[in-house]
Length: 113
Length: 113
Image (cartoon, rainbow over all chains, first blue to last red; front, side):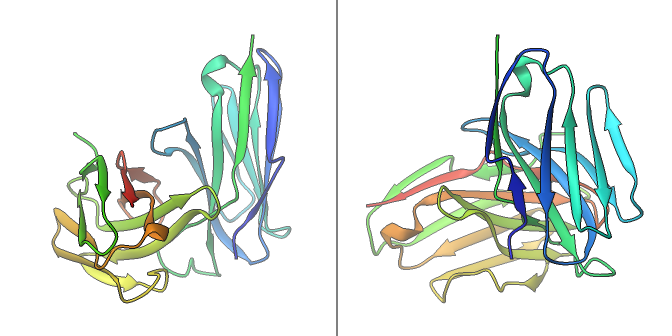
């Protein structure tokens, strides 16, 4: 079953912050985050392994709560270049269940001046 | 590194014709994935290979779809016969392993008329 992302869409003014959530009905081994711009391929942002770690680089970070089977992506001081559709990808099971990801429903983010 | 290379970028074909999509993964990546993306269903995994061996093809819609990976540097996805409902963007992705992100190719936009 596909992970559910919220919100479905969000519009920000440049400089504002946003949080995108990803929720799964299955126990998770790891969570990936990707950004896809219109007409392009998804681009890998980061991976979080079970253990509740938080990762980030510059103004984009993420957390993973394995007990709640949830992950959140945090975008701070948004820039125009952050616009796109964000997908979480989840790997289920205690040991990962193989090297395949199930992608979430996607969140469209638009940053305006 | 040239990244994951897919061909063709666009394909328009008539219903009933055979379609072959091609993918060259990143050298050294041992996992290869074929995904299909549509507005209605999002990113769906069709099949994935580990070390050239098909591991999970449960996402392949039906017998009209087949995939091969004859060596570490080449994979094909074939649809025969094609139908209008197969119209989508088909992405190939590769990965270094279970705890690494995916690198996606530019995709093949398939239109079946």
